[in-house]
Image (cartoon, rainbow, N blue to C red; front, side, top):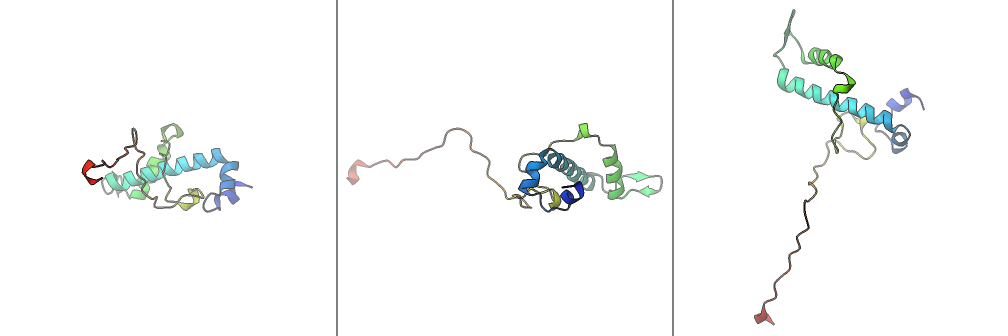
Length: 120
């Protein structure tokens, strides 16, 4: 299987992920960082950056900033993150991800009914 065939799969199959785990993990890391940068550019800098020719579009600003990011600067995606781009989703992921309750902390609480002496 060559890289072109791999990139055309939608979403990433279990077989492909097992065979090329390191490759897919790195591709997903890149995609996570791209999504974060794009969101930050749109949210915080949209319409606020000017160059020699005037206001820079979000796309131009994103491309410029992405070109300056090194691999060392990238963050690992958090557990449970699902990419917007379906080419980087795993076989068992849905977008948007379903909200999950956090795991409980401490011991489970068991409530027992109190037996009333008068009801016997």
